Each structure stands twice: as C-alpha cells, then as structure tokens.
Image (cartoon, helix red, strand yellow):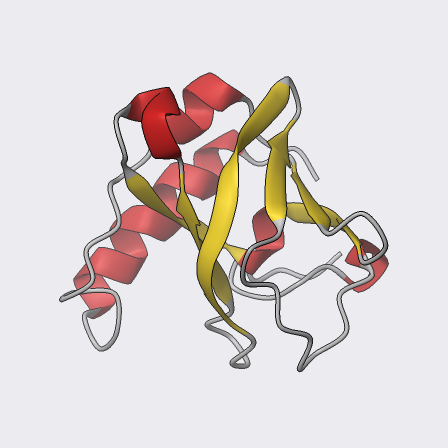
Length: 117
C-alpha cells in the first residue's frame, strides 16, 4: 500500500495516461456521480467528481489513494468511502486545488481520517 493519499494504489488497476473523464464513480454504498476532471501527476493524483443532483451539484476532490479499483470495461471507478463520507468532504475549490498546500493538507487530513485501505 502506498503511504501517499495522492497516489493510486498499485492494486487499483489504473493505467497512467488513461482518460477517466466521464467514468461513473461508485462509493461503498452506491453511485455518487461521474469524473469531471482528473490528474495522474506523481504525488498529486486526484479525481474531481461531479455529484450531480445527489448533493445539489457539488464537486468533490478525491485523492487517487481513495480509489480501490478502476474498471476499464464498465467505465467505473470504485472508491473506498461511503456516500456520507463523500458528502461531508471538503468541497472542491478550483482556485486552491493547485498550488495551495494548506488546501491539500485539509483535503488529505479529511480523507486520511476515513481511509480503510
């Protein structure tokens, strides 16, 4: 297991360079939305998930370390979090997510406290 929440787990099956935009995202207890944007950058890989009407159009930033599996055939990504954990997560801030170490620390702290893998 990787120590970094900002890197894909080796067992997740993600192939760097694969465009994940539009993939459905599945929490441990059901569907939460689809990938709006993503990055494979080393030590800062993430997914931005559009939760749609489920939580009123909120976008959330999910570190790649929360991904347990990528299913290329079904275009689905499985996350090791519940819907409520994602609903309660810090909202994606497009102005802070690149270059703001404090924002990344806030997001990291939230997801590290809920990490099971």
